[in-house]
Length: 227
Ligand code: HEM
Ligand code: HEM
Image 1: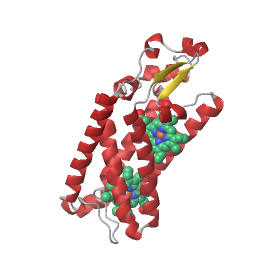
Image 2 (image 1 turned 90 degrees about the horizontal axis):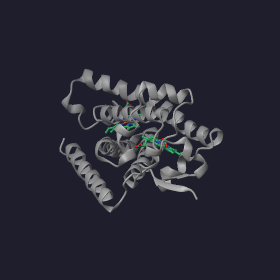
Image 3 (image 1 turned 120 degrees about the vertical axis):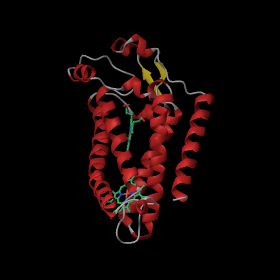
Image 4 (image 1 turned 60 degrees about the vertical axis):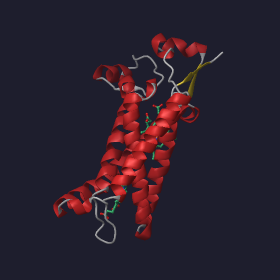
């Protein structure tokens, strides 16, 4: 019988799919331009809220959500590349690099967005507090960084397809259901300690996550509307 282990708690899954939704929304709206720029900003504020939540959850969340459980060391990365590393339930060392790169690039995008000016009709809410040269610098970063984001997202999706097609590893299902299913014949590929580490995903964890996300949303909303 397959072993079913909760890997991604509900907060991580909700974070992931809302993030995808908001980024797609922000990219569609910025390409529409004009009045849709207002929507670009709303999606951007939502991305910022989600990222602050995810970073906090990386310290206080369940086992596999914690950065400390997948922070890649050079040794881990090299072992993984040489095929010597055991299988892991959470992000593997290469996946972890891509997760940190995505979180960093998206944070830079959402934060610089607060200070940019399209020189037509739309300004980020904090642009008025900084000098023109800072606005111009942040606008350039906001522009160039979007290419990095496109690249990282393309690699991210290509990697998931690669694992599915060539390594027979379905990473997508756990990001939907939360669970990894381990066949008894595969158990030996994992460290026994890893197989014993499920993520807690009960009403308490979910309640704390919801309160945290709501609190962050209120603070971000307040800072933006009162600026
Ligand atoms: C992570 C979230 C965000 C993403 C992925 C994103 C992405 C982008 C992209 C792709 C562009 C178009 C660059 C170009 O082709 O010229 C852009 C431009 C712009 N974004 Fe964002 N953005 C985000 C957040 C924000 C936020 C929070 C704001 C402000 C509230 C904002 C304000 C703007 C403005 C005003 C422009 C036009 C800049 C110009 O024309 O120079 N963005 N953004
Ligand atoms: C806007 C596009 C996307 C962004 C920005 C994005 C971002 C992320 C991030 C930040 C994580 C880490 C989750 C965490 O630990 O918090 C992640 C994981 C994951 N994403 Fe995405 N994602 C995107 C699109 C997609 C799509 C379209 C799919 C499905 C094909 C997908 C499938 C996954 C899976 C399966 C994982 C878990 C990978 C693993 O097991 O290590 N993502 N994504």
